[in-house]
Image (cartoon, rainbow, N blue to C red; front, side):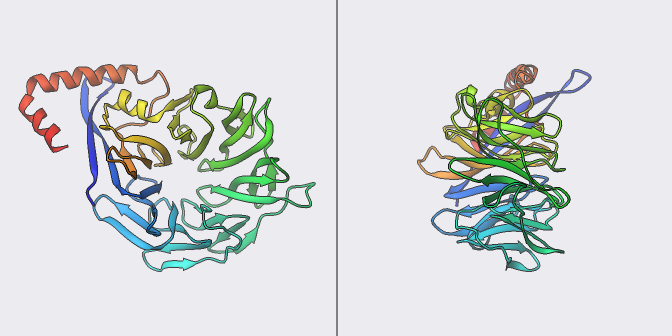
Length: 360
């Protein structure tokens, strides 16, 4: 199972103005090995093998460890607790216990269970399992006698949950659940329609992002208590209908996919992730196409997802960066430093540069 690895040289400007050289790295997995989530420090990647039905846990040092049938959708912060869906059965895997089935009912085979960063809580469908309190179902929002839940993410300590609450076709709203406040509906993008769902949540549960119908089509939104729901303009960037998949705990970096294009939002606006990696970090992916970005580490420097390999198959990928992704327009100085440093390096040690390209 040979992997494709690409290195990029990045010049990072220090406060004194001197340049220190670090490397951004890209690695693709074997065919059909899909990366779904990454641990807090970026060292553990989980996912599943399409067609083979095997969940996996991957580290660079240890390679692939297969965890049994299913897909690993979520991983705790330390990488040691993993949420797996095996044809509708939800289990929690740890090195000590292996995969243990959880009493979560009603999940379908493609549902993506989420696990809290502390590993204590798994959510899927309309239920929440906690290692201390067991399984509970989410209460209906005030004023509703019927409706359906689809949970998508949970805060670091398991106390806040988000997803979509459906109450008609296509009527749905994002929800935010806490034990104290119950199920709170979050509304819709101003000027849009109530057809949306929360897909990711910040570490403390104060920010929620998702996909919703805005004035000009489906867009990504971010919700906070002070501001409510705000459209982020992903649809206006021409990417297609966007689906946010993960965010950093502080909410400053949001990643997802839109029209088979991996995108990143980092405070000022959405951008094509592949273009950001090439422009700001000097990565040339040699024909590999980033299509989905599914997870981001807590520091924003490791990203994982799915893409199309130049040999003609789909595979997962991992990117490690020497710094966080800058807001749009913030990478100009970095890009200039990159070009200057790369040229100087080639001029001073051409033979070593050639050897490095051959090895990569």
